Amino acid sequence: MKKIISILLLFSLFACGTDDKINTVNFSFNFSHNWDETPVSNEDFNSIKFTNANNDQLSIERLRYLISDIKFENSNGESIIIEGYNLIDVTNNQNLSFAPSVSIRKGTYSNVSFIFGFKNEKNIDGAYPDLNATSWNVPAMLGGGYHYMQLDGKFLNSSNTEQGYNYHAIRAADNPGMNPTFPQDTFFEVHLGNVTISNDAIFNIEMNIAEWFKNPHTWDLNVLNQMLMPNSNAQILMYDNGQNVFSLESINQ
Amino acid sequence: MKKLNLHICLLTLFIIASCTNEKVDIFSSTPSPLQIPQLFEDKILNPVIPIDNPQTEEGIELGKKLFFDPILSADNTQACADCHAPENAFTDTDRFSDGISGALGTRNSMPIFNLAWNYDEKFFWDGNSFSLEHQAFIPVTDPIEMASTWKDVEQKLQNHSEYPNLFQLAFGTATIDSSLVTKAIAQFERTLISSNSKFDKYLLNEISLTPEEFNGFNVFMDENKGDCFHCHGSENNPLWTDNLFHNNGLDSQFSDLGFGAITGDPADNGKFKSPSLRNLVFTAPYMHDGRFSTLDEVINHYSEGLQNSPTIDPLMKKVAQGGVQLSEQDKADLKSFLLSLSDYEFINNPAFKNQ
Image (tube, rainbow over all chains, first blue to last red; front, side, top):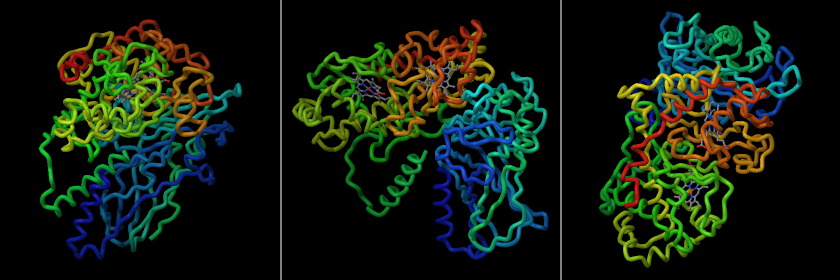
Protein backbone atom coordinates (compact mmCIF):
# COMPACT_ATOMS: atom_id res chain seq x y z
CA MET A 1 0.00 0.00 0.00
CA LYS A 2 2.74 2.35 1.06
CA LYS A 3 4.50 1.45 -2.12
CA ILE A 4 1.69 2.55 -4.34
CA ILE A 5 1.15 5.78 -2.54
CA SER A 6 4.80 6.62 -2.72
CA ILE A 7 4.98 5.67 -6.35
CA LEU A 8 2.17 8.08 -7.02
CA LEU A 9 4.00 10.74 -5.08
CA LEU A 10 7.18 10.12 -7.00
CA PHE A 11 5.26 10.29 -10.18
CA SER A 12 3.86 13.66 -9.34
CA LEU A 13 7.25 14.92 -8.23
CA PHE A 14 8.82 13.79 -11.46
CA ALA A 15 6.08 15.40 -13.43
CA CYS A 16 7.28 18.74 -12.13
CA GLY A 17 10.61 18.07 -13.86
CA THR A 18 13.49 18.92 -11.60
CA ASP A 19 17.15 18.96 -12.56
CA ASP A 20 17.82 16.27 -9.99
CA LYS A 21 16.06 13.84 -12.22
CA ILE A 22 19.19 13.61 -14.34
CA ASN A 23 21.47 12.74 -11.45
CA THR A 24 19.29 10.41 -9.50
CA VAL A 25 18.08 6.92 -10.19
CA ASN A 26 15.65 4.46 -8.72
CA PHE A 27 16.67 1.15 -7.31
CA SER A 28 15.11 -2.03 -6.06
CA PHE A 29 16.21 -5.06 -4.08
CA ASN A 30 15.21 -8.43 -5.52
CA PHE A 31 15.43 -11.38 -3.19
CA SER A 32 16.03 -14.89 -4.50
CA HIS A 33 16.61 -18.02 -2.50
CA ASN A 34 18.70 -21.10 -2.90
CA TRP A 35 19.80 -24.18 -1.04
CA ASP A 36 23.55 -24.38 -1.66
CA GLU A 37 23.11 -23.00 -5.16
CA THR A 38 19.96 -24.92 -6.10
CA PRO A 39 17.25 -22.29 -6.58
CA VAL A 40 14.38 -22.51 -4.10
CA SER A 41 10.91 -21.05 -4.54
CA ASN A 42 7.60 -21.77 -2.89
CA GLU A 43 7.09 -24.55 -5.47
CA ASP A 44 9.77 -26.49 -3.62
CA PHE A 45 7.90 -26.22 -0.34
CA ASN A 46 6.01 -28.96 1.52
CA SER A 47 8.17 -31.93 0.61
CA ILE A 48 11.20 -33.33 2.37
CA LYS A 49 13.79 -32.50 -0.26
CA PHE A 50 16.57 -30.61 1.48
CA THR A 51 19.48 -31.97 3.47
CA ASN A 52 21.29 -29.76 5.93
CA ALA A 53 24.89 -29.81 7.09
CA ASN A 54 23.97 -32.18 9.91
CA ASN A 55 22.48 -34.58 7.36
CA ASP A 56 18.95 -33.98 8.59
CA GLN A 57 16.42 -34.20 5.79
CA LEU A 58 13.86 -31.45 5.88
CA SER A 59 11.08 -29.58 4.16
CA ILE A 60 10.13 -25.93 4.17
CA GLU A 61 6.46 -25.04 4.62
CA ARG A 62 6.73 -21.33 5.33
CA LEU A 63 9.46 -18.75 4.98
CA ARG A 64 9.19 -15.06 5.62
CA TYR A 65 11.69 -12.54 6.91
CA LEU A 66 12.07 -8.84 7.44
CA ILE A 67 14.73 -6.45 6.22
CA SER A 68 14.98 -2.77 7.08
CA ASP A 69 17.04 0.41 6.85
CA ILE A 70 18.87 0.08 3.56
CA LYS A 71 21.99 2.21 3.71
CA PHE A 72 24.21 3.73 1.00
CA GLU A 73 27.60 5.00 2.17
CA ASN A 74 30.13 6.89 0.12
CA SER A 75 33.87 7.19 0.63
CA ASN A 76 33.50 10.59 2.31
CA GLY A 77 31.79 8.80 5.14
CA GLU A 78 28.42 10.24 4.18
CA SER A 79 25.51 7.88 4.20
CA ILE A 80 21.83 7.86 3.46
CA ILE A 81 19.59 5.48 5.32
CA ILE A 82 16.34 4.60 3.68
CA GLU A 83 14.03 4.21 6.61
CA GLY A 84 11.44 1.52 6.22
CA TYR A 85 11.13 -2.21 6.08
CA ASN A 86 10.01 -4.99 3.81
CA LEU A 87 8.55 -8.33 4.86
CA ILE A 88 9.62 -10.87 2.26
CA ASP A 89 7.05 -13.65 2.10
CA VAL A 90 8.48 -16.52 0.09
CA THR A 91 5.51 -18.77 0.90
CA ASN A 92 3.10 -16.50 -0.91
CA ASN A 93 5.58 -15.01 -3.36
CA GLN A 94 4.98 -11.55 -1.96
CA ASN A 95 7.36 -8.63 -1.59
CA LEU A 96 10.27 -10.54 -3.10
CA SER A 97 11.09 -7.26 -4.72
CA PHE A 98 11.42 -4.11 -2.65
CA ALA A 99 11.52 -0.77 -4.42
CA PRO A 100 11.71 2.06 -1.89
CA SER A 101 10.20 5.27 -3.16
CA VAL A 102 13.46 7.10 -2.64
CA SER A 103 15.83 7.82 -5.50
CA ILE A 104 19.57 7.89 -5.00
CA ARG A 105 22.36 9.78 -6.70
CA LYS A 106 24.41 8.13 -9.38
CA GLY A 107 27.97 7.45 -8.35
CA THR A 108 30.17 5.09 -6.44
CA TYR A 109 29.28 3.90 -2.99
CA SER A 110 31.80 2.32 -0.70
CA ASN A 111 29.14 0.11 0.86
CA VAL A 112 25.49 -0.74 0.52
CA SER A 113 23.86 -2.56 3.41
CA PHE A 114 20.58 -3.48 5.04
CA ILE A 115 19.47 -4.75 8.42
CA PHE A 116 18.23 -8.32 8.79
CA GLY A 117 15.31 -7.82 11.16
CA PHE A 118 14.97 -4.52 12.97
CA LYS A 119 17.49 -2.47 14.90
CA ASN A 120 16.40 -2.45 18.54
CA GLU A 121 15.18 1.15 18.44
CA LYS A 122 12.97 0.35 15.45
CA ASN A 123 11.72 -2.88 16.96
CA ILE A 124 8.84 -1.14 18.71
CA ASP A 125 6.09 -3.34 20.07
CA GLY A 126 2.89 -3.03 18.07
CA ALA A 127 4.09 0.03 16.15
CA TYR A 128 3.53 -1.18 12.58
CA PRO A 129 -0.08 -1.94 11.63
CA ASP A 130 0.75 -3.92 8.51
CA LEU A 131 3.03 -6.21 10.52
CA ASN A 132 0.46 -6.57 13.31
CA ALA A 133 -2.22 -7.40 10.77
CA THR A 134 -0.08 -10.25 9.49
CA SER A 135 0.70 -11.55 13.02
CA TRP A 136 4.42 -10.87 12.87
CA ASN A 137 4.65 -9.91 16.54
CA VAL A 138 6.85 -11.23 19.31
CA PRO A 139 5.18 -11.75 22.71
CA ALA A 140 5.69 -8.93 25.19
CA MET A 141 7.13 -11.42 27.69
CA LEU A 142 10.10 -11.77 25.32
CA GLY A 143 10.47 -8.04 24.86
CA GLY A 144 7.78 -7.55 22.23
CA GLY A 145 8.48 -6.10 18.82
CA TYR A 146 8.61 -8.32 15.79
CA HIS A 147 10.00 -11.53 14.38
CA TYR A 148 13.03 -11.24 12.11
CA MET A 149 12.32 -14.53 10.37
CA GLN A 150 9.90 -17.44 10.44
CA LEU A 151 11.19 -20.59 8.79
CA ASP A 152 8.83 -23.50 9.44
CA GLY A 153 8.81 -27.02 8.14
CA LYS A 154 9.32 -30.68 9.00
CA PHE A 155 12.39 -32.82 9.37
CA LEU A 156 12.93 -36.55 9.64
CA ASN A 157 13.88 -37.11 13.24
CA SER A 158 16.16 -39.79 14.66
CA SER A 159 13.28 -42.27 14.67
CA ASN A 160 12.66 -41.43 11.01
CA THR A 161 9.32 -39.72 11.50
CA GLU A 162 8.38 -36.26 10.33
CA GLN A 163 8.49 -33.67 13.06
CA GLY A 164 7.84 -29.92 12.92
CA TYR A 165 10.51 -27.29 13.35
CA ASN A 166 10.09 -23.53 13.86
CA TYR A 167 13.30 -21.67 13.11
CA HIS A 168 12.02 -18.31 14.31
CA ALA A 169 14.62 -15.57 14.65
CA ILE A 170 13.90 -12.73 17.07
CA ARG A 171 15.80 -10.46 19.45
CA ALA A 172 17.38 -12.84 21.98
CA ALA A 173 15.76 -12.45 25.40
CA ASP A 174 16.25 -13.96 28.86
CA ASN A 175 14.07 -13.88 31.96
CA PRO A 176 10.77 -13.87 30.07
CA GLY A 177 8.09 -11.89 31.86
CA MET A 178 7.54 -8.30 32.82
CA ASN A 179 11.22 -7.35 32.61
CA PRO A 180 13.07 -9.54 30.15
CA THR A 181 16.79 -8.96 29.64
CA PHE A 182 18.69 -9.04 26.38
CA PRO A 183 21.98 -10.93 26.35
CA GLN A 184 23.14 -9.62 22.96
CA ASP A 185 21.78 -8.09 19.77
CA THR A 186 20.64 -10.60 17.20
CA PHE A 187 19.61 -8.34 14.32
CA PHE A 188 22.54 -7.88 11.97
CA GLU A 189 23.77 -5.66 9.19
CA VAL A 190 24.22 -7.32 5.80
CA HIS A 191 26.99 -5.71 3.74
CA LEU A 192 26.67 -5.90 0.00
CA GLY A 193 30.02 -4.20 -0.63
CA ASN A 194 30.95 -1.33 -2.91
CA VAL A 195 28.90 -0.53 -6.00
CA THR A 196 28.83 1.98 -8.79
CA ILE A 197 25.40 3.16 -9.80
CA SER A 198 25.01 4.68 -13.23
CA ASN A 199 21.39 3.93 -13.99
CA ASP A 200 18.18 2.62 -12.45
CA ALA A 201 19.46 -0.41 -10.59
CA ILE A 202 18.13 -3.78 -9.52
CA PHE A 203 20.16 -5.44 -6.78
CA ASN A 204 19.90 -9.21 -7.04
CA ILE A 205 20.31 -10.54 -3.54
CA GLU A 206 20.46 -14.22 -2.69
CA MET A 207 19.67 -15.97 0.54
CA ASN A 208 21.29 -19.38 0.86
CA ILE A 209 18.82 -21.04 3.22
CA ALA A 210 21.23 -23.94 3.91
CA GLU A 211 23.62 -21.46 5.59
CA TRP A 212 21.18 -21.07 8.48
CA PHE A 213 22.02 -24.67 9.41
CA LYS A 214 25.69 -24.72 8.60
CA ASN A 215 28.22 -22.15 9.51
CA PRO A 216 29.81 -21.77 12.04
CA HIS A 217 27.35 -23.98 13.97
CA THR A 218 26.17 -27.26 12.51
CA TRP A 219 22.50 -27.19 13.39
CA ASP A 220 21.01 -30.40 14.79
CA LEU A 221 17.26 -30.30 14.29
CA ASN A 222 16.85 -33.22 16.66
CA VAL A 223 18.07 -30.93 19.42
CA LEU A 224 16.87 -27.52 18.28
CA ASN A 225 13.51 -27.69 16.53
CA GLN A 226 10.70 -25.93 18.34
CA MET A 227 10.23 -23.41 21.14
CA LEU A 228 13.34 -21.55 20.02
CA MET A 229 11.93 -18.07 20.62
CA PRO A 230 12.41 -18.19 24.40
CA ASN A 231 15.77 -19.94 23.91
CA SER A 232 18.34 -17.14 23.82
CA ASN A 233 21.19 -19.54 23.09
CA ALA A 234 19.39 -20.73 19.98
CA GLN A 235 18.81 -17.10 18.96
CA ILE A 236 22.51 -16.38 19.24
CA LEU A 237 23.33 -19.46 17.16
CA MET A 238 20.91 -18.20 14.49
CA TYR A 239 22.60 -14.81 14.62
CA ASP A 240 26.00 -16.42 14.09
CA ASN A 241 24.79 -18.61 11.26
CA GLY A 242 22.99 -15.72 9.61
CA GLN A 243 26.19 -13.80 8.91
CA ASN A 244 26.88 -15.51 5.59
CA VAL A 245 23.36 -16.20 4.47
CA PHE A 246 22.98 -13.23 2.12
CA SER A 247 25.06 -12.27 -0.87
CA LEU A 248 24.82 -9.77 -3.70
CA GLU A 249 24.79 -11.79 -6.91
CA SER A 250 24.61 -8.98 -9.43
CA ILE A 251 23.24 -5.56 -10.19
CA ASN A 252 21.19 -4.94 -13.32
CA GLN A 253 21.39 -1.37 -14.54
CA MET B 1 -3.20 -7.18 0.91
CA LYS B 2 -3.01 -7.13 -2.85
CA LYS B 3 -6.71 -6.53 -2.94
CA LEU B 4 -6.25 -3.53 -0.71
CA ASN B 5 -3.74 -2.15 -3.16
CA LEU B 6 -6.16 -2.68 -5.94
CA HIS B 7 -8.81 -0.83 -4.05
CA ILE B 8 -6.49 2.05 -3.52
CA CYS B 9 -5.58 2.13 -7.19
CA LEU B 10 -9.22 2.11 -8.04
CA LEU B 11 -9.81 4.82 -5.51
CA THR B 12 -7.08 6.92 -7.06
CA LEU B 13 -8.46 6.32 -10.50
CA PHE B 14 -11.84 7.24 -9.23
CA ILE B 15 -10.55 10.46 -7.74
CA ILE B 16 -8.79 11.33 -10.96
CA ALA B 17 -11.85 10.44 -12.96
CA SER B 18 -14.10 12.44 -10.73
CA CYS B 19 -12.00 15.53 -11.33
CA THR B 20 -12.71 15.37 -15.02
CA ASN B 21 -16.45 14.79 -15.10
CA GLU B 22 -17.38 17.71 -12.97
CA LYS B 23 -20.86 16.54 -11.97
CA VAL B 24 -21.78 12.92 -11.57
CA ASP B 25 -25.39 11.99 -11.19
CA ILE B 26 -25.62 11.10 -7.52
CA PHE B 27 -28.75 9.92 -5.79
CA SER B 28 -29.14 10.95 -2.22
CA SER B 29 -28.14 7.99 -0.09
CA THR B 30 -26.41 8.92 3.15
CA PRO B 31 -22.78 7.86 3.58
CA SER B 32 -22.24 5.88 6.75
CA PRO B 33 -18.55 5.08 7.07
CA LEU B 34 -17.62 2.22 9.37
CA GLN B 35 -16.94 3.23 12.94
CA ILE B 36 -13.48 1.81 13.40
CA PRO B 37 -12.79 0.90 17.03
CA GLN B 38 -9.84 2.58 18.70
CA LEU B 39 -7.81 -0.61 19.09
CA PHE B 40 -8.30 -1.56 15.46
CA GLU B 41 -7.38 1.95 14.36
CA ASP B 42 -4.21 1.85 16.47
CA LYS B 43 -3.08 -1.66 15.73
CA ILE B 44 -4.08 -2.95 12.32
CA LEU B 45 -4.74 -1.93 8.73
CA ASN B 46 -7.99 -0.40 7.61
CA PRO B 47 -10.93 -2.62 6.69
CA VAL B 48 -11.60 -3.63 3.12
CA ILE B 49 -14.54 -1.76 1.60
CA PRO B 50 -14.99 -2.28 -2.12
CA ILE B 51 -15.06 0.98 -4.00
CA ASP B 52 -18.24 0.01 -5.81
CA ASN B 53 -20.10 -0.69 -2.58
CA PRO B 54 -19.61 2.17 -0.13
CA GLN B 55 -21.40 1.97 3.20
CA THR B 56 -24.63 3.99 3.31
CA GLU B 57 -27.35 4.24 5.93
CA GLU B 58 -29.96 3.09 3.46
CA GLY B 59 -27.83 0.22 2.18
CA ILE B 60 -27.07 -1.03 5.69
CA GLU B 61 -30.73 -0.80 6.73
CA LEU B 62 -31.80 -2.69 3.64
CA GLY B 63 -29.09 -5.30 4.15
CA LYS B 64 -30.22 -5.86 7.70
CA LYS B 65 -33.83 -6.34 6.62
CA LEU B 66 -32.76 -8.86 3.99
CA PHE B 67 -30.53 -10.68 6.46
CA PHE B 68 -33.44 -11.33 8.79
CA ASP B 69 -36.02 -11.96 6.07
CA PRO B 70 -36.92 -15.56 5.12
CA ILE B 71 -38.04 -14.22 1.74
CA LEU B 72 -34.59 -15.21 0.45
CA SER B 73 -35.39 -18.91 0.84
CA ALA B 74 -37.44 -21.06 -1.51
CA ASP B 75 -40.40 -21.59 0.82
CA ASN B 76 -40.02 -18.39 2.86
CA THR B 77 -39.05 -20.29 6.00
CA GLN B 78 -35.37 -19.54 6.43
CA ALA B 79 -33.41 -16.34 6.83
CA CYS B 80 -29.66 -15.88 7.01
CA ALA B 81 -30.22 -15.13 10.69
CA ASP B 82 -31.54 -18.64 11.32
CA CYS B 83 -28.02 -19.97 11.04
CA HIS B 84 -26.38 -16.66 11.96
CA ALA B 85 -28.21 -15.44 15.05
CA PRO B 86 -27.20 -12.24 16.89
CA GLU B 87 -27.29 -13.91 20.31
CA ASN B 88 -24.72 -16.44 19.08
CA ALA B 89 -22.40 -13.81 17.64
CA PHE B 90 -24.10 -14.59 14.33
CA THR B 91 -23.57 -18.32 14.24
CA ASP B 92 -25.91 -21.02 15.55
CA THR B 93 -25.76 -23.66 18.26
CA ASP B 94 -26.17 -26.68 16.01
CA ARG B 95 -23.28 -28.87 15.03
CA PHE B 96 -24.53 -28.83 11.44
CA SER B 97 -27.17 -26.28 10.54
CA ASP B 98 -30.31 -27.58 8.95
CA GLY B 99 -31.50 -25.96 5.77
CA ILE B 100 -35.07 -25.44 4.65
CA SER B 101 -35.72 -29.10 4.00
CA GLY B 102 -34.15 -30.19 7.25
CA ALA B 103 -31.15 -31.63 5.40
CA LEU B 104 -27.89 -31.11 7.26
CA GLY B 105 -24.73 -29.61 5.84
CA THR B 106 -21.33 -30.98 6.77
CA ARG B 107 -19.86 -27.85 8.29
CA ASN B 108 -20.51 -25.86 11.41
CA SER B 109 -21.99 -22.41 10.78
CA MET B 110 -19.53 -19.54 11.18
CA PRO B 111 -19.91 -16.44 13.31
CA ILE B 112 -20.07 -13.11 11.48
CA PHE B 113 -18.08 -10.22 12.92
CA ASN B 114 -15.07 -8.12 11.95
CA LEU B 115 -15.23 -9.65 8.49
CA ALA B 116 -14.26 -6.36 6.82
CA TRP B 117 -10.81 -6.98 8.32
CA ASN B 118 -10.35 -10.28 6.53
CA TYR B 119 -7.79 -8.67 4.23
CA ASP B 120 -7.45 -11.63 1.89
CA GLU B 121 -11.26 -11.72 1.62
CA LYS B 122 -11.34 -15.51 1.61
CA PHE B 123 -14.57 -16.62 3.25
CA PHE B 124 -15.91 -19.99 4.43
CA TRP B 125 -13.98 -22.58 6.38
CA ASP B 126 -12.13 -23.52 3.21
CA GLY B 127 -11.74 -20.05 1.69
CA ASN B 128 -14.00 -21.01 -1.17
CA SER B 129 -15.60 -17.59 -1.59
CA PHE B 130 -13.82 -14.38 -2.45
CA SER B 131 -15.38 -11.16 -1.04
CA LEU B 132 -18.42 -10.72 1.16
CA GLU B 133 -20.55 -9.64 -1.80
CA HIS B 134 -19.78 -12.87 -3.57
CA GLN B 135 -20.25 -14.91 -0.41
CA ALA B 136 -23.82 -13.72 -0.01
CA PHE B 137 -24.73 -15.14 -3.42
CA ILE B 138 -24.11 -18.66 -2.26
CA PRO B 139 -26.52 -19.59 0.58
CA VAL B 140 -29.58 -18.43 -1.36
CA THR B 141 -29.18 -21.11 -4.00
CA ASP B 142 -27.39 -23.73 -1.89
CA PRO B 143 -29.68 -26.77 -2.13
CA ILE B 144 -29.29 -27.65 1.55
CA GLU B 145 -29.46 -24.09 2.79
CA MET B 146 -32.07 -21.74 1.31
CA ALA B 147 -32.57 -23.78 -1.87
CA SER B 148 -33.93 -20.90 -3.87
CA THR B 149 -33.11 -19.46 -7.28
CA TRP B 150 -32.05 -15.87 -7.76
CA LYS B 151 -34.68 -15.38 -10.42
CA ASP B 152 -37.32 -16.37 -7.94
CA VAL B 153 -35.90 -14.23 -5.14
CA GLU B 154 -35.59 -11.19 -7.42
CA GLN B 155 -39.18 -11.59 -8.45
CA LYS B 156 -40.47 -11.95 -4.90
CA LEU B 157 -38.56 -8.85 -3.82
CA GLN B 158 -39.72 -6.90 -6.86
CA ASN B 159 -43.36 -7.73 -6.12
CA HIS B 160 -43.00 -6.89 -2.45
CA SER B 161 -44.73 -3.82 -1.06
CA GLU B 162 -41.61 -2.29 0.52
CA TYR B 163 -38.45 -3.59 -1.13
CA PRO B 164 -38.52 -1.70 -4.45
CA ASN B 165 -38.64 1.58 -2.58
CA LEU B 166 -35.87 0.51 -0.21
CA PHE B 167 -33.62 -0.41 -3.15
CA GLN B 168 -34.44 2.93 -4.72
CA LEU B 169 -33.30 4.68 -1.54
CA ALA B 170 -30.17 2.58 -1.17
CA PHE B 171 -28.99 2.26 -4.75
CA GLY B 172 -30.98 4.74 -6.82
CA THR B 173 -32.88 2.06 -8.68
CA ALA B 174 -36.03 0.15 -7.91
CA THR B 175 -35.01 -2.61 -10.29
CA ILE B 176 -33.88 -5.35 -7.97
CA ASP B 177 -31.16 -7.77 -8.95
CA SER B 178 -29.03 -10.26 -7.09
CA SER B 179 -25.96 -8.07 -7.12
CA LEU B 180 -27.76 -5.28 -5.27
CA VAL B 181 -29.18 -7.77 -2.78
CA THR B 182 -25.69 -9.06 -2.00
CA LYS B 183 -24.26 -5.55 -1.84
CA ALA B 184 -26.82 -4.54 0.76
CA ILE B 185 -26.23 -7.67 2.83
CA ALA B 186 -22.48 -7.15 2.68
CA GLN B 187 -22.88 -3.57 3.90
CA PHE B 188 -24.84 -4.80 6.89
CA GLU B 189 -22.31 -7.55 7.59
CA ARG B 190 -19.46 -5.02 7.57
CA THR B 191 -21.14 -3.10 10.40
CA LEU B 192 -20.99 -6.20 12.62
CA ILE B 193 -17.93 -5.14 14.56
CA SER B 194 -16.99 -6.75 17.85
CA SER B 195 -14.46 -4.81 19.91
CA ASN B 196 -15.85 -4.49 23.43
CA SER B 197 -14.78 -7.61 25.23
CA LYS B 198 -13.37 -7.56 28.72
CA PHE B 199 -9.91 -8.05 27.24
CA ASP B 200 -10.37 -5.07 24.90
CA LYS B 201 -11.25 -2.95 27.91
CA TYR B 202 -8.18 -4.24 29.68
CA LEU B 203 -6.05 -3.17 26.71
CA LEU B 204 -7.67 0.26 26.83
CA ASN B 205 -6.75 0.44 30.54
CA GLU B 206 -10.38 0.58 31.57
CA ILE B 207 -10.39 -2.54 33.73
CA SER B 208 -7.96 -5.13 35.00
CA LEU B 209 -7.88 -8.87 34.46
CA THR B 210 -8.21 -11.48 37.15
CA PRO B 211 -4.94 -13.30 37.95
CA GLU B 212 -6.40 -16.37 36.22
CA GLU B 213 -7.18 -14.47 33.03
CA PHE B 214 -3.77 -12.86 33.07
CA ASN B 215 -1.99 -16.17 33.52
CA GLY B 216 -4.19 -17.64 30.79
CA PHE B 217 -3.08 -14.88 28.43
CA ASN B 218 0.52 -15.76 29.23
CA VAL B 219 -0.16 -19.43 28.50
CA PHE B 220 -1.59 -18.31 25.16
CA MET B 221 1.48 -16.20 24.37
CA ASP B 222 4.19 -18.51 25.73
CA GLU B 223 5.92 -20.62 23.10
CA ASN B 224 6.80 -23.11 25.84
CA LYS B 225 3.14 -23.50 26.82
CA GLY B 226 0.11 -22.85 24.61
CA ASP B 227 1.80 -20.99 21.75
CA CYS B 228 -1.54 -19.98 20.32
CA PHE B 229 -0.49 -16.49 19.16
CA HIS B 230 1.23 -17.61 15.97
CA CYS B 231 -2.19 -18.33 14.45
CA HIS B 232 -4.77 -16.64 16.65
CA GLY B 233 -3.60 -13.03 17.06
CA SER B 234 -2.41 -11.24 20.18
CA GLU B 235 -2.84 -7.96 22.02
CA ASN B 236 -1.38 -6.41 18.85
CA ASN B 237 -3.82 -8.12 16.51
CA PRO B 238 -7.29 -7.62 17.96
CA LEU B 239 -8.87 -9.82 15.29
CA TRP B 240 -7.66 -12.87 17.24
CA THR B 241 -7.12 -14.77 14.01
CA ASP B 242 -4.64 -14.72 11.13
CA ASN B 243 -7.46 -15.59 8.70
CA LEU B 244 -5.11 -18.19 7.18
CA PHE B 245 -5.53 -21.90 6.59
CA HIS B 246 -3.89 -24.48 8.82
CA ASN B 247 -4.22 -28.09 9.83
CA ASN B 248 -4.38 -27.95 13.62
CA GLY B 249 -4.17 -31.71 14.05
CA LEU B 250 -7.81 -32.73 14.34
CA ASP B 251 -7.55 -35.89 12.20
CA SER B 252 -5.01 -38.31 10.83
CA GLN B 253 -7.20 -38.87 7.77
CA PHE B 254 -9.53 -36.36 6.19
CA SER B 255 -13.14 -36.88 5.23
CA ASP B 256 -13.24 -33.18 4.34
CA LEU B 257 -10.20 -31.91 2.43
CA GLY B 258 -10.98 -28.28 3.28
CA PHE B 259 -8.62 -25.77 1.70
CA GLY B 260 -6.99 -28.58 -0.32
CA ALA B 261 -10.19 -29.19 -2.27
CA ILE B 262 -10.17 -25.52 -3.27
CA THR B 263 -6.50 -25.10 -4.17
CA GLY B 264 -6.11 -28.59 -5.61
CA ASP B 265 -2.80 -28.86 -3.76
CA PRO B 266 -2.57 -32.01 -1.60
CA ALA B 267 -0.28 -30.02 0.73
CA ASP B 268 -3.40 -28.04 1.69
CA ASN B 269 -5.53 -31.07 2.57
CA GLY B 270 -7.12 -30.89 6.00
CA LYS B 271 -6.49 -27.17 6.34
CA PHE B 272 -9.24 -24.83 7.50
CA LYS B 273 -9.40 -21.15 8.30
CA SER B 274 -8.31 -20.20 11.81
CA PRO B 275 -11.45 -18.85 13.45
CA SER B 276 -11.37 -15.71 15.56
CA LEU B 277 -11.28 -16.49 19.27
CA ARG B 278 -13.61 -13.64 20.09
CA ASN B 279 -17.03 -14.53 21.41
CA LEU B 280 -16.35 -18.21 22.04
CA VAL B 281 -18.84 -18.18 24.91
CA PHE B 282 -21.60 -17.72 22.32
CA THR B 283 -20.31 -19.79 19.41
CA ALA B 284 -20.16 -23.45 20.53
CA PRO B 285 -19.80 -26.01 19.10
CA TYR B 286 -16.27 -25.56 17.78
CA MET B 287 -14.15 -26.41 14.72
CA HIS B 288 -15.27 -26.65 11.09
CA ASP B 289 -17.37 -29.71 11.84
CA GLY B 290 -18.51 -28.62 15.28
CA ARG B 291 -16.91 -31.70 16.83
CA PHE B 292 -16.18 -30.12 20.21
CA SER B 293 -19.07 -28.87 22.27
CA THR B 294 -16.99 -27.25 25.02
CA LEU B 295 -13.85 -25.17 25.31
CA ASP B 296 -12.41 -27.80 27.64
CA GLU B 297 -12.50 -30.26 24.79
CA VAL B 298 -10.77 -27.74 22.53
CA ILE B 299 -8.03 -27.11 25.07
CA ASN B 300 -7.59 -30.83 25.71
CA HIS B 301 -7.24 -31.27 21.96
CA TYR B 302 -4.28 -28.88 21.82
CA SER B 303 -2.84 -30.24 25.05
CA GLU B 304 -2.94 -33.97 24.41
CA GLY B 305 -5.28 -34.84 21.53
CA LEU B 306 -3.30 -33.94 18.39
CA GLN B 307 -3.51 -36.35 15.48
CA ASN B 308 -0.53 -36.51 13.18
CA SER B 309 -0.85 -36.26 9.40
CA PRO B 310 1.41 -35.13 6.57
CA THR B 311 -0.13 -31.65 6.46
CA ILE B 312 -0.26 -30.95 10.18
CA ASP B 313 1.04 -27.46 10.81
CA PRO B 314 4.69 -27.39 11.88
CA LEU B 315 3.61 -25.00 14.65
CA MET B 316 1.81 -27.87 16.35
CA LYS B 317 4.16 -28.96 19.12
CA LYS B 318 4.98 -32.30 20.70
CA VAL B 319 2.69 -34.06 18.26
CA ALA B 320 4.11 -37.46 19.23
CA GLN B 321 2.95 -36.86 22.81
CA GLY B 322 -0.38 -35.50 21.58
CA GLY B 323 0.30 -31.82 22.21
CA VAL B 324 1.65 -29.09 24.43
CA GLN B 325 0.81 -30.88 27.73
CA LEU B 326 -0.66 -28.06 29.75
CA SER B 327 -1.11 -28.41 33.50
CA GLU B 328 -4.67 -28.44 34.84
CA GLN B 329 -4.12 -24.95 36.26
CA ASP B 330 -2.86 -23.60 32.92
CA LYS B 331 -5.81 -25.18 31.13
CA ALA B 332 -8.29 -23.54 33.46
CA ASP B 333 -6.54 -20.19 33.20
CA LEU B 334 -6.31 -20.42 29.42
CA LYS B 335 -10.05 -20.98 29.35
CA SER B 336 -10.65 -17.93 31.57
CA PHE B 337 -8.55 -15.85 29.24
CA LEU B 338 -10.39 -17.12 26.15
CA LEU B 339 -13.71 -16.27 27.75
CA SER B 340 -12.48 -12.73 28.46
CA LEU B 341 -12.56 -12.21 24.67
CA SER B 342 -16.35 -12.42 24.71
CA ASP B 343 -18.19 -9.26 23.82
CA TYR B 344 -21.62 -9.00 25.44
CA GLU B 345 -22.20 -5.53 24.03
CA PHE B 346 -21.84 -6.99 20.58
CA ILE B 347 -24.53 -9.62 20.97
CA ASN B 348 -26.84 -7.15 22.71
CA ASN B 349 -26.37 -4.30 20.25
CA PRO B 350 -29.89 -3.27 19.16
CA ALA B 351 -28.53 -2.11 15.79
CA PHE B 352 -27.75 -5.74 15.01
CA LYS B 353 -31.07 -7.22 16.06
CA ASN B 354 -34.26 -7.77 14.20
CA GLN B 355 -36.92 -5.56 15.67
